[in-house]
Length: 82
Image 1: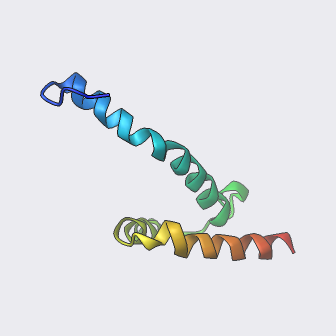
Image 2: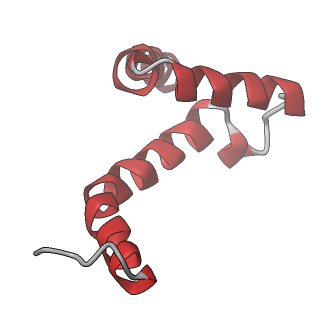
């Protein structure tokens, strides 16, 4: 579908169309982060600065969510299950 980017409505439709594939990945990542940092257990003791650091790492390192966090999360799951 071609969107008219000269109008706000067209830009909004375009933005929605390109962001659709990322929504499920975002939801999945949010759930993994809640689990990994144990916010689901109300057990997270991270400061605001530590959260900002994690966010900055994820935003500046394209490998973070695809590789680094995936490995860390997998190891965490193994530890939490034992």
